[in-house]
Image (cartoon, rainbow, N blue to C red):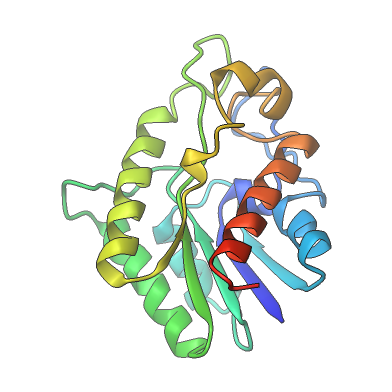
Length: 199
């Protein structure tokens, strides 16, 4: 079994830097790493810090994403903006194009859309300001999964990720996870895939 993960810094494994924003602090202990340990399968990580669906589509078109042979493809985008549940915007079209490319390149794969996780609304955290983008992405992703009949892992619904637990799971900037946070994220996704009998 092969699982491919497409996303932004929360897939690549950015831990954030305390008091700073926009500085990548990527660790190998990311959610795909922990998902591989939990599932005992090969998990490919195609996450890129700061990317939106538009930049991921370009990255894909440039030959940097290869989902061929995948059994499951997880897509988690929208934290960096670009998705809108109420308006037809470029990011929406580009996300749909990513899905189509995945279907073409891995016709037997189960495509799973993931809503992005909780982002802080605490102004003292350096990455405060993402919450509205995340809310838009969550609404859009839920709507799109339903419309296209795709599997949904509703990460936004994970009760562990909340304002009260930011100091534990998103301690550096209120957005990026700690090692413990990525472990929880991987477990949440793993359990959801098991429930849908995809694993």
